[in-house]
Image (tube, rainbow, N blue to C red; front, side, top):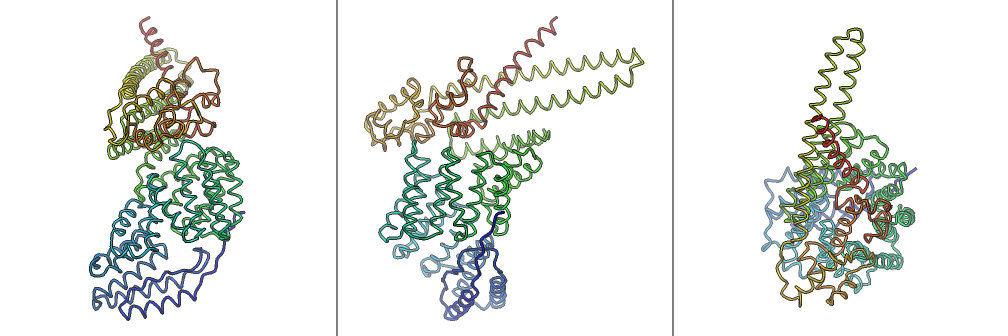
Length: 624
């Protein structure tokens, strides 16, 4: 049984805050003292905090007309802060925005600074990470922030986490390194330890090898040195997640279970983070019942604390468990809930995959109209995202190709369903009319003719689909062999020579087959340094090195999977042949790049081949 850690609510601290705020408001001074109630747990009684909030609101509304601008700001700041403490974040955002309209950054820079800090943090909590960082970037340029080191560091800390969420890993890494060095100067091992964890997470995306685990191990050592139990437990969670993402779920589980021993020290959010991590790892290990139990517990707690992002993650975990258990109606409900939350958090990347996953679930429950609608939504969202982010044409063509493959699959299932119903209808008619030979003959002739016509039309449609897919594959090939010329980097010596060598290594020598290739070893091969090589890869291939290598590995794997020459190879053999160290890493990367698992990719390819054979056979039969 999963237990929720209980932490006592501090009534005394809140009573003191009331006194201090009213005294400060009477003097016309902004009250910015933090409300430190200890770890946030919803097992305590919040009645006192709610009563204080209602009293604040009532008193403010009763004297609103008599308050001058400065006192208005003082009251609105406290109301917004308490709203945020009650997790009424949307209300808090409106309150802080209202206060900022009354605040001049020139005449009242102190109030402007604290309002912006709280607003930026509120944006972060509702998933508006980009807007949060825009708020902090404007704030950091203010002269008043140059003198406030503590608040500058706090803003940079939040920005680093936001950049990580936005997948701007290089910016997140730079800020984390800056914060790490600052923490070491202050002997703050707690903060330094967490920054190492964050740098490890960033390095996993930037580097092409697994050296980034050194960050996690050093962070764990530093956390133990800090003797802060919550930090030790949180670091263990992050280390476990890193091992799971790298394809080592058993090792990940060991770290996560060790972290669970520290649950009494976690905040509510930290506890939910541990539950979700355990759920994900048990899912990877195919222990669906345990994965489901942890996901269900995380959902219960996340709803209580209105944690949008964790409710979203819990919905995804539960949906995946239901899919594994073949309870697809429930999976559909949780995926729809995840889509609604994703729209609220304004995350377009997630929507693309969610719509596609929901389309597959609708196929399983034979809701083909919904399956097509969700597939269309996925494709529309993706093409819009490509346009907005100026992504490369190759990715756009690949998703278009996958889109038509899925549409063909749905059409085939619809046709099969119609044929099954038609067979049932024939049987009923035959039984009823068995004594009337003439009627049987007439019905048989009509049905046979109708089925032949349907079959012929179906084959014609399949031919059209194959032609469209051939055109798409041709465009993909053209895009790969004639890439768009990028602007030359002014500071890189022999850039053109390096690019040509790199293309030869990728397309001719297939260097990506080497699973140990790294940024440093490739830079040495090309007689340049890692900084220049990273810049060249980013400028000319719109990618980092790890993604570029994985793209070529998957392209090679797709060809091998459908080739007769390699039909005796196992999945592990193909994964190893193209440069992957593990089967799970190959599966995960293949799904990210193609949208399909390797097995599903082969199945769809064989279906298209079968269609071609059936068309030829049908045409021969019609001619006869």
